[in-house]
Length: 91
Image (cartoon, rainbow, N blue to C red; front, side, top):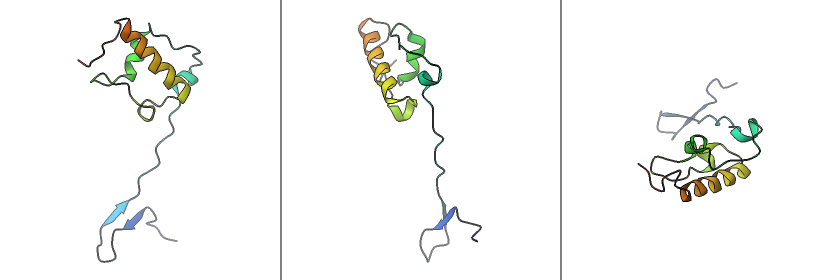
């Protein structure tokens, strides 16, 4: 049995060892976990977490939300921007 199964050689001539990346831990959707039915656009403090510093909406892979709640968050952010609760541009 090979002790170094997490190591692979780059080339036969090189003795450099490259580690395999660990699989990322599965993130659970915050809204599914908390049993929140509705994403409210007036809850600015909660939806601010899903906006980057430059004002862009963060993607699903960064937020950890499920597809349904990511769509709801996107809609809520856009509504909050129109109502002037959130800025269109970053600070």
